[in-house]
Length: 163
Image 1 (cartoon, rainbow, N blue to C red):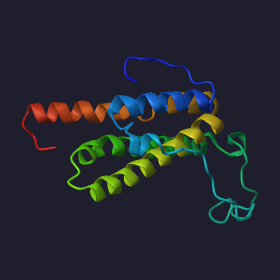
Image 2 (image 1 turned 90 degrees about the vertical axis):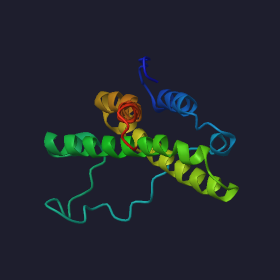
Image 3 (image 1 turned 90 degrees about the horizontal axis):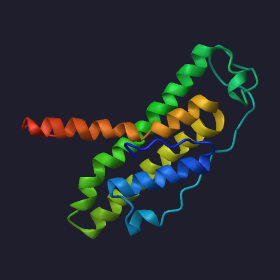
Image 4 (image 1 turned 120 degrees about the horizontal axis):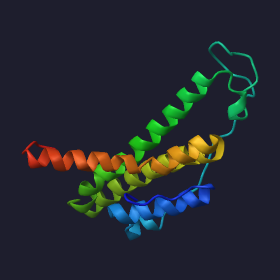
């Protein structure tokens, strides 16, 4: 995705970027490409906040119900960081995938990579669907910031640092 600027209007737009990213980093193999990603959330056990300062109050259903901008920003940042680490993990595991010594090892790392991508998918779904314009901008760059990880590894390797 580096060098391209695509505007995200819906989660479907983001899915297209996700597919491009998988191809670009080389993990769109049959083992992974056949996995059907979907946005799944667990059942809500109670309608009340269960701990903290807001314990006993009704859970917030949308971003505007969160009491302070500081809390909204913190939540946005946590979701962005979680998504970034999921996608960065996939990029870092590519070498293990490519050099797996046995079929069993390749299947094991495939499962790990799929789970990491699925978690990143979930985070981006939250960003796009619940955080308005800011969430869409963050989802657009989430995952692509792990490009910085690749650049850092190249720079470290050029100075003979073990990566």
